[in-house]
Amino acid sequence: GVFMSDPQDTRKLGYGNPLGRLMHIASEKLEPPIGMIELTFACNLDCEFCYNSKVLNQLSFVELCDAMDQMKALGVFKMTFTGGEALVRKDFFELAQYGQKIGLGLILYSNVILLAREEMADKVAALNFSVVETSLHGASAETFDKLSRVPGSWDKFVKALKNMKARGIRSVLKATVT
Image 1 (tube, rainbow, N blue to C red):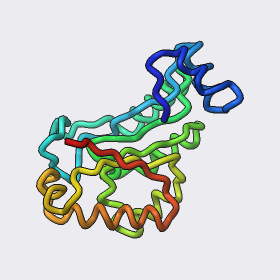
Image 2 (cartoon, rainbow, N blue to C red):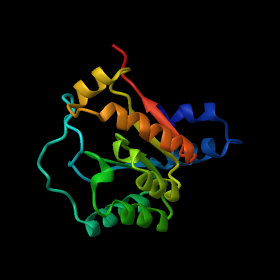
Image 3 (cartoon, rainbow, N blue to C red):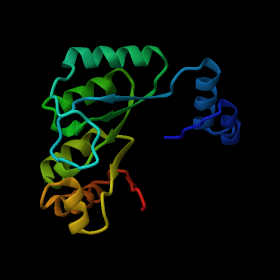
Image 4 (spheres, rainbow, N blue to C red):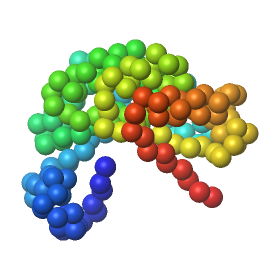
């Protein structure tokens, strides 16, 4: 997504550009063009830097659909699903299908570990997310596994990236450099 701290910056995109037009309209109406919703606090990793509560209370399917409806009514045209780990939620795919049904473009922010499984990668590919964003927790198995506190998570991460590439899933890799 494109983040503009100053609505006037939308002019740099140019109105001839469809994204530029949408960002301009959103900034004129002061409507948020991209929403984010945490589907769950649950996660399959235990990252030492994670800020999420380990409390597993989460909104119901109906409550999340209502939240998407409200955001859509506010002018949101894309929705980022995140968590915890969004993919561990049992009704994840139904929530994604609902978002698409009401006309939202979908972005997934995930640790992608579950996409190491072929069938899970196939199901995510079938939903045609705009992009799947993930974080690189280290450049080696030693660092990655230490930070995630789950042995073998590096190997699953690499396998997931290969599965995503093989299925044409557009991805963004994020990293903090220290």
